[in-house]
Length: 483
Ligand code: UDP
Image (cartoon, rainbow, N blue to C red):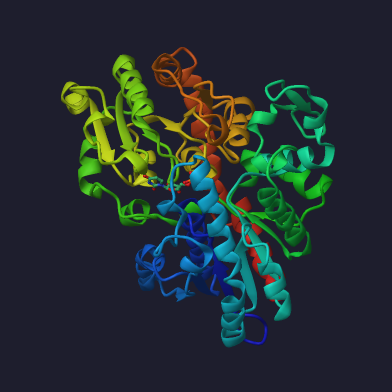
């Protein structure tokens, strides 16, 4: 309530991909737990993914609602019912074309959103970074627009410095490294690791979206970031104090999920029950299991899956593997895994075909490491659970996140991927995967990495208690919205 007794009402509008929707729904819960009314905006086919976690908050007396907008899939040239990036999947050139169409469809949501703003008269609009038009929509109703970013400050700083100095122009080849000296820690990158829009020779649709995003952010009320101060203080300070951006680190948002069901039921329906998963984990020794999952969008082809399976077998580590493959070839179920792999692995490995209850798994003491594609949601969840990582970046901000994990925080070892798969299709051999797994799980440095990771996990938990950094950042933000 503000001083006049008015309950602040906040609209929260996530981009329709699991990696964006999951943390945004957590964010809505956090606002509602602070006494605000939160309304989550989504499309009809995405609503069930949100209503389940929301239903569980009802008993807590929090005020969260869902409103839907019709998604113009067909109008934008997408298949009917395509309302989530999940249904586009693998990142070859064909699916990039579909993602452009998907983003075009989202721009058509501006008008229906404005009608909803007119009807509900909220006090603030929090919208995903991929909805740059949301700043203008909010301005029409005289309310602040906050940009939600599901990435880290390290990656935000790196992107800003690349944009400011364009060092990629000074290197002669795509794979020659350039060094960003204007950001703390002298970050080394190659052009092949940059998002498409930042390569001079790349296409204009993506570049246009990137510049619209930057412009809309500068005009917005500020940025809420799913990270916490203690994990990257130099980069939070650089972004806020040197670059002068208004930004609130309010993560890790996943920590608002305390119960087993809350941790297990985020995003898609899990392909294994909480009980079965916990029973398997409970039977293992502490730090003995590696968990493998590549987020919600990366699906490998059969030959890459076979390399992973060989690496797991050779590493002799126990594992939980959330496995999904390229949807294009799903009909030939047979050659997913090497012949007899599952039988040979017996109780050593738990294979989850489909969606894993990730936070529940990561939080278990049996998990000693996480082989991840370095999506920020997954990286932050691993940090929060105090787990070291085997890093395998694929595209987007994954390469920056990997650098934060392996070079700055020193809690990860890479499998050696050097460039965006979306463009160059890098294939990783089983030997490289096995070496990295062994280093993280059992090498001489494993214990030290685990100790560092555990310490960060403790800091994450401290950040969310009353008077912790996240707690006060969220309070500051709510106070600013109230005035
Ligand atoms: N996730 C999950 N089970 C899965 C795959 C993903 O719960 O089998 C969740 C994961 O916990 C994270 C999100 O989906 O919150 C993935 O976000 P991230 O940023 O890691 O990657 P993206 O999916 O955007 O590539």
